[in-house]
Image (cartoon, rainbow, N blue to C red; front, side, top):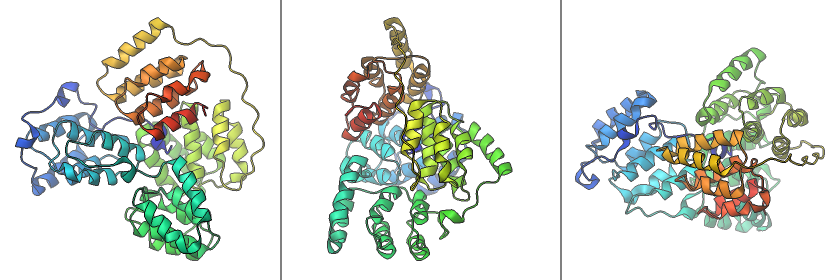
Length: 449
C-alpha cells in the first residue's frame, strides 16, 4: 500500500542470519566462475525451500565459490514476494562484487514492480552498470499529474506520439494507465490506450491489471483489455460488481490470517483475496484495525478503494468515522471510492502540548540504532520509538540519516511526521534526501508546501 509498497517496511529474507554470515567473502569476485545453469537450477530450488534463518548462510556459501548473472540474481530475488526483500537480496550480490555481467544490471531493475525497489537497486548498482533513474522508474506522481493534464489536451491524432515519447523514459502503474484511459469517454478508445501501453511492455505492476479491467463499464472493453493483459497479469473479464462479498465465516478465518501476517507479506495476502471477493466497509475496517499505526490502517483501507473492491461504497463515511486518529480519518476520507460523496471533514483539533525526546533519550536511541547491522532492524527501532516518543524536526533529520537507503529514509520520516512537535521546521527533514520524489513525499506527508 503506498502502495503497502511505500508504508510497509520489511527486511531482507536472509537478514535473520548472524552478521558474521554476511561478512565479505573472498576471493575477489572477478576471479570466480559464474554458477553453471544446471547447478543454478538446483540451487534456486534449494533456496526456495530454505527457512529464512538459514537462507543467509546458504547464499554466502554459494558466493564464496561463484559469481552470478543478472538474470540469476533476479531469479533469486523472486524467491520472496516482498519488493523490499528482493532489493536487499540483489544489493547483497552487488555489495560483495558477485555480479558477472554488470552491463545487464537494468534487467534486474526492470524486473521489479515497485518504484522504491527499483530506486534501491539503482543506488547499489555494481561498478560497470549503466543505469538511469529517469529511464527505469515508474513515472513519479507529481510528474504524472502534469502529464495527465497534457494528455487530456492532446489532439486524438497525436496521442500515440505523446505516449510513445513518454514510454521511452517511464513505465506506468495500472492506476496511472486507468487514469490515462479515462481521458476519453469512448470505451473502445480507452481499451486502445490501455492495450497500447501493455503491448510496449511498459506496465510496472501487471499483477494489478485487474484494476483496469474492473474500472471499465463496457463488457467489450473489459474483454479486450483482458485479452491484451501483460505477462504476469491474472484477470478475468468479469467486472468488480460480479465478485461476491466475502462470506462472514470465510472472513472470520481471513481476518485471523491477516492478523498473523507480517507487514512485508500483507499486500500479497490482500491482493490474493480481492481477486475472488469484494469486502464490506465493516470488513475493511476490521482488517485495517489489524495494524497498530493509523497510517498503516489508512493504507489498508485505501488499498481496497484503489482496487475497486469495496462492496458498499455508500458506507465509506462509516469507515472514516471508525478511525480513532483525526489524521487517520483524513487519510481514509481522501481515498474514498469513486462516486462517494464525503461530508466536509471536521478540522483536526489542535494538538495537546507535548515535549520532544530529551537529549539524553535521543542520544541513547541514536546509539541503539547505530549498533544495528541492517536497515530492517534500524527501521524497527525507530518505529518502536515513534510509538512512544515525540521528536523535533531536527531529531528526525538526524535519525533518518542513520539509514542507508533514500527510500527507507523517506518512509521513516513519514512514519515519524505525526510525532513531530515543531512541524513549522519540517521542510528541513526533506533536505537530507537525495531524490526529488522522496523529498516531495516527505514534504507532503509532513504537511509542508
